[in-house]
Length: 468
Image (cartoon, rainbow, N blue to C red; front, side):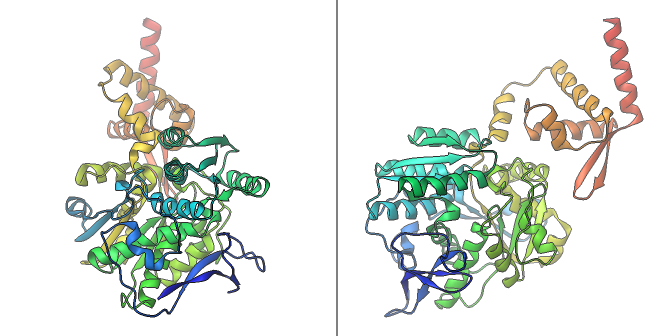
């Protein structure tokens, strides 16, 4: 088998010449992607287990830019399995890539293509991980990297971009605004377009994760992936479909896509039987999947349905908690979005769908060292806080709840980011255990209220302040 020297529209099937990788079909506006066709013989992979082992199924480049990406471990999560009640749980640990993210796969291929075509500048809109990766690989071959980022970018990812000498411009509050700006600059400046959602090579890079999983342990029963733009879900499914078409496997896994409760345009559409994603809100601390208008949403929905899979949502609190479990039981430090696949394993409908003995692979996409929420938590807890400060924090939280019933995320926002979201939830747990706060289910979130005992405590604190 060999790769066709053309791009094919996923909607109308029209072929396009690949003078430059581009996202949209000129005929119908559908997404373009690379396709495979029969060649002179069967596909075989040789060399060490790295990204470039899969050259036979990747678009051709004349210059290879590499930092040692790919070949990440598929770790059997024995202790985590036991804590969750599963027998065969595996973690595909993409934090082992050079910039600690799975996006290094896409970046290696994209920057190799840019270098092969003779570009000296590229443009990329990013929520964080992809921009950090692209800037690292661009630095490797002295290509100027211009990044467009929304306001809320994790500090660790921004630090990587700056250290790799990228030029960074802030554009709006959302990734959608950044993408629109990147498109305009591509046209105005003639720069190479490296944005995940606008370059089909992104999918080609990410599909190699599926190839690796199969070579490492065969086809699993389930693969669970966090979803933002939908590109990762589509890429993983594309990889498994290609391997079946190439005769490398005789089956495909079922897939589960996970989104944040506060930003779930794909999962919402799946639940309603829609073929296109909804226009959702972007209310989640998991910046890597904070995408309210997912460009690859339609293809992600197609992958979920073709695989007879599931689309689910988890709360920010659940992601933070799952991240702690992954670190505690398996020694992998994952960012909140990367913990979403493990978090969903506690949902009843997911547990009911997975049979005893099924093999399950959770994709851990990026390191927790890149995220503000976890970094702040580590920094603030190097020294144990005094009792007085702990009491003052709990009192503030209790007073916020006493004004009106509310949610944990709303409390964190009212505190203006003075502590991590995880710390807020820990205080809430303590207050509930002590009988000062009560919680009731409101959809998929907890509505918090103050108990009578909590009101007595606040009254006692008021009297104490008067005496002092």
